Length: 274
Image (cartoon, rainbow, N blue to C red; front, top):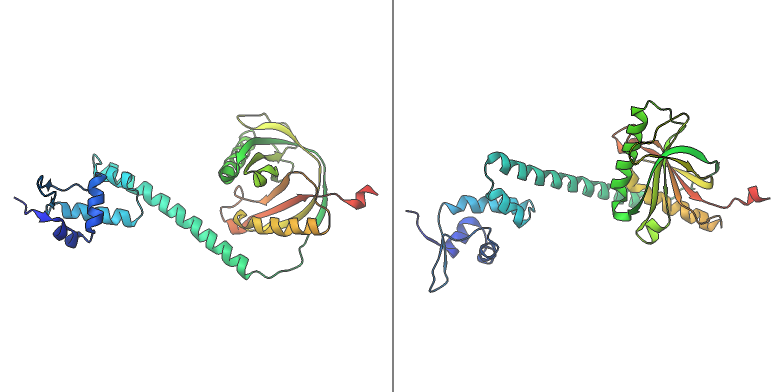
């Protein structure tokens, strides 16, 4: 028969504080083997020490209490390992996002101000295969990636001929109101059949101030800031969607450092109005 351990002894053995043990009892994560009905004292057993140690390690990995409970109650080792693996995958994804954010911040702090290489460009209307939607700003990166992937898959499946690099249009409301119209597109040279969300669209003409951005899109906000400042300073800016052209992107290489994007700001060109 196992020796009954007081909550204090069990705390010393497991490095879980008495306060934490009481909390785990309340939420049903680690219940005492018995509770004295008269005094309310909690007692544990030696067999519960390894369980507590597993809990400590899972909580150190920031696994939420409900998920820890699911691991402990798993029907078999395979189910338990799948739950743990899913949490580790989420941690690795979060770590990757953190590393990207740290790298972006360092680049921003270390960068030197250089003259902005702006080009003025007249863009004619273009026939394209496109996907559009009203998107929440928080969902935009995932929507953008999925929609572009779907467009490229549609074009590839039909062996259709693109007439230029893929691109995107992003309404001002996405940034001012956190929700607005977005469209990604691939200009088409020949026939292509609309499939799924992909529709035949006409990308409208525009006058743009354009800057080329090398590297991941996580740093693109810096270029947008510089380009917008340039357009305002020169009194060129007009209302209209922001525009991007993906000269080299995820469809071409998984290395984001190799990506190359043209970013376009809508402008009024006085030289064309004369």
